Length: 90
Image 1 (cartoon, one colour):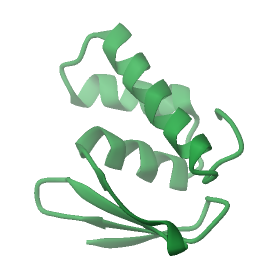
Image 2 (image 1 turned 135 degrees about the vertical axis):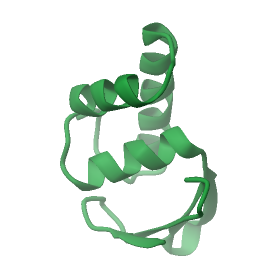
Image 3 (image 1 turned 30 degrees about the vertical axis):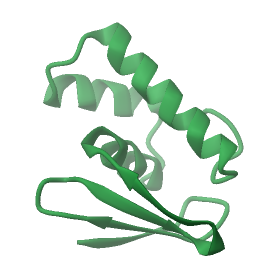
Image 4 (image 1 turned 90 degrees about the vertical axis):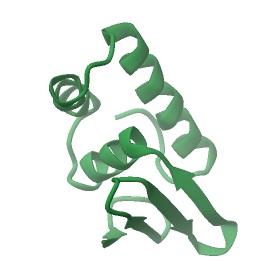
């Protein structure tokens, strides 16, 4: 599946395979592999969901400790900020 991400500062295309792994294509910056949790975060952000909402959806769907999940989300968001895809934490 190919998803055009519209809610980012630059054009982003996300390709998602049947195992929910993804590859994120960012203009001339290249491509980045994204795991299943990262794919879900990107899709949530693209739908303008809050981080709190994304957290709760992931918590229900996956068996992950709250502290680990929150850390994973925060680290992924930091990477998106560092790539200048989003301005700040939402």
